[in-house]
Amino acid sequence: MKLKLLRALLLVAVICTMNSCSSDASEATTENTTTQKVVNYTYNTSEIETMNLINTYRVSVGLNPLEKINHMSYKSEEHDNYMIANNVVNHNDFVARSENIIKVLGAKIVSENIAYNYGTPQAALNAWLASPGHKENIEGDYTHFGIAIRENPVNGKKYYTNIFAKI
Image (tube, rainbow, N blue to C red; front, side, top):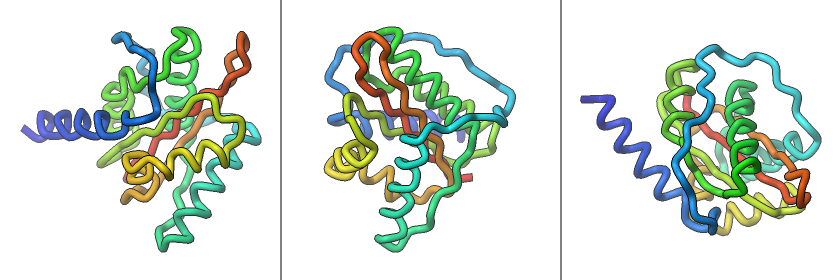
């Protein structure tokens, strides 16, 4: 019963967070599901800057800063790579990503923000904060996060996937 309720809540969270971050049509796919905890992840300058901006914002509104988890950034990177390979911007397989994070890390709740074609971390954060669903995720009752920002080698546009979790 709890699993059914959790899946229903995750589906609602996905629907709520989808408003304004995706304009392309999406198709269902199956992503690689890493069941072991990913320990190593190399962050680029934009990812570090985005995490710092999110934490600075959270602290400015009286919330706790979030701790980064490499496994969540790896799952974010998988999703960025999927979106680039398929030329889409969507939350496909969010349920699989969240179930993986729940299983591997013991998370109680998981949410996700994505963004596309923002040249700077500040521009992406501004867009998320201007969107009620994305802002709710940034201000949510979370303890940890992960992020990946990848550039499409064909057109140079950036893909952002930011996952939040309460652990």
